Structure formats: C-alpha cells, structure tokens
Image (cartoon, rainbow, N blue to C red; front, side, top):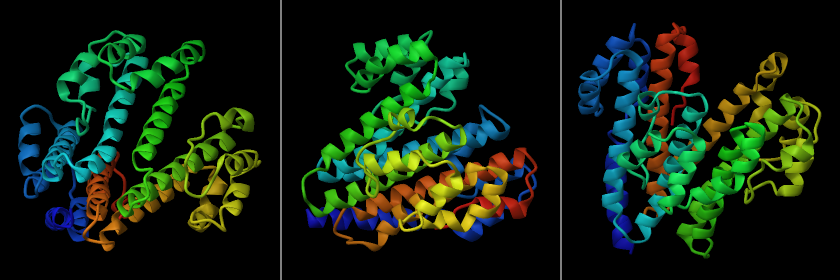
Length: 351
C-alpha cells in the first residue's frame, strides 16, 4: 500500500506542477477581453479544451465549457491512477460531490424552466454518473420526473429527494431538496471513513471542516433573512468538526451578524473578524462567504505538506485544481462585467 501511495503522490505532485502559477493567473487578469483571455488559455494545459469549446461556443460559454471539460477529464485520469483499491475509494468520495452538484443543477434548471441545452452546458461530469445519464435526466419535464427517473435507476440520491419532495411540493422552496442531498452526501461520506486509520482521519477532517463552513454559511443567511432559529435548525448538516447541533442552534439564535462574528472568535473561523467592518456596514454576507471559501481551499491544499505515503496528496491536488478552475472562472466572469483589474486580483485565492 505504501508503494501505491508513493506512486500516487509522485503523480499528484507532477500534475500540481502543471497548474497555473500566480504570475500566470495575474497575466490572465490583464487580458482586455474574453477573446484574448481564451487565446492566452490556449497556451496553457487548457489548450485542447479551449480549441474544442471554440468550435461550438463563443464568449464566456466557451471558457466555461473548456473549464468543465478539463476538470472532468483530469479527474477521470486520477480515477485511473488511483485504481479500484483504497485510494480509488477515497477519490470517489470527493467526486461524488459533483454527482450531487449536477443533480442540483438539473433540479434548479427544471425549477426555472431552463432549456435542456442551458442545463447541459452547466454540468461537470466528473463523478460516477456519466454524460449519458445526465442527458436523460435533463430530458425530464420537471423535478418530480427527474427524481422518479433516478429512483427507477436505483441511484442512491433518489432516496433523500423522494423523502423531501412532499415538503418541496408544498412550499416550492428548492433549498429543501438541495439540503436533503447535502445531508445524504456528507452522512454517507463520513460513514465510509468511520474506521480509525490515518487516511480516514485525513478525509474526515476535510469533510467535517466543509460541514462547519456550510453550517456557518447557513447561519449567516438565516440571521440576514430573520429566519426563526427553530426553523434554521432543520437546515444544519450533522458531523461538523467544531460545532455540534446544540452549538449551531445557539449561534442561529443570535440577533446579528456582528454577534455571530464575535462568537466565532475563539474558533478556527476567527478570521471572519478581520473582514467584518465593511461587510457589517453593508450587510454583505458574501464577503464572509468568500473568506470561508478561502479558508476551506487553503486547508485542503495544505494537505500536500502531510505524509506523502498517504491520501494527503489526493486531497491537496483536488483542492488545488478546484481553486484553479474557480479562479479562471472568476476572471472570465469579471471580464464580462468590466470589473477593474485591481478589484479582480483581490477576488482570487492564491495557494
């Protein structure tokens, strides 16, 4: 097993060395428009995907499609490297989140009556469900039909969706279905790494940190929207690293974002106090959400510094690649909105 992880570590570090550097990202920032941004990406490891996307799309859609295809193909490659043993099971945990994300995307699309092409163009087929599966799901007329088809295929994600569908049908709140998927994913993932081993512990730490971050985001939104603390409690994910159910309920009962930031100061999320001033004045929770995302990414990438004969390099590369895709996407979207370069630089996460 150690030899396997040594090989995987060497491959992950080799792939990490081909990610865009800070200087290369900043060069992208200063491109005047989307066309020149796409041309610059042709000189990078995104070359093949950009050329393919340009044959079908223009503008922001070209870059978005290239990013999605590159991400999916990269992790299909990693699945082959990891094989079907323990390492393969670990990478599957991270890739299952894309199955969940894609199902959410389809449900959102159906909810707003988006076209099939519009929905397909936002799918990232990096998980176990393939493009043919998503193509069939997208053909369904509504959310109920999507869930029924998942159930007929005996895909596990259908179970939480079926249970929560009556509540969604009554309220029309899509967050009910999305929250059910998140709860299912994290419970299943944590159960799969419950045994006490070093590798399981590394994966658990990452998953539990994600749960903490998602719960803090939920509390930020419920405080902003004046949601009753009892109602908010049903939205929390279980299994976080720092906050249990009792602590989350107490935080949800706070009256302001300022109170929440103060209560978080003794925790690993004390960095929110550093961005509180401007955000509190403008009631912008997006500033806090951005800081939480940055914390999560950096914690994931820091896994590269851990035992090379473990799953650590897989964790580190996943977050580094995800961060690269996110940064390029931010640059492209900011180009469409004529965002000043200096502001754009501040939006990126460098790791």
